[in-house]
Image 1 (tube, one colour):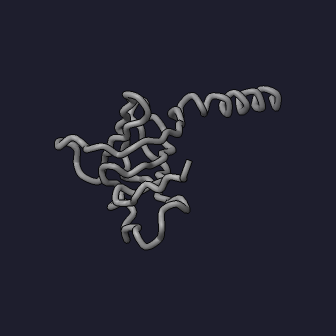
Image 2: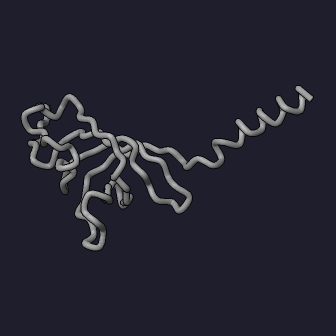
Image 3: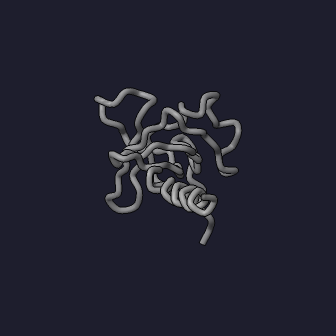
Length: 119
C-alpha cells in the first residue's frame, strides 16, 4: 500500500509542470500598443529582428537596473512603460499562448539618454 501511495505521489509531482505554462525571459523595446487594448493591461515588446510579443502586465512586479537613476524613475513604475523603454521580461505563457508578465526589469527608460563608450 505504501509503495502504491508513493508511486501515485511521485507521478502527481511529475505531472504538475505539464499543467503550468511555459516560462520565458526576453528583452526588447516597448512599442506603441493598439488602441483596442485597455491601458495598463497589455504592452507590446519588440525584440531583435521582427519578434513582437504581447504581454499582459496587470500582475507584474517592477524592478530597475542600476543604469536607471533614481531621479528619473516615476513614482509608479507602470508609468515608465512608455514607448521606447528598454525592458527585460520574465513571463509565463498561458494555455492560449499569451505571455503573462511576472517581473519587468527596466534597463533604460524612454526619456533616458543613451550613453556610449568611446571607441
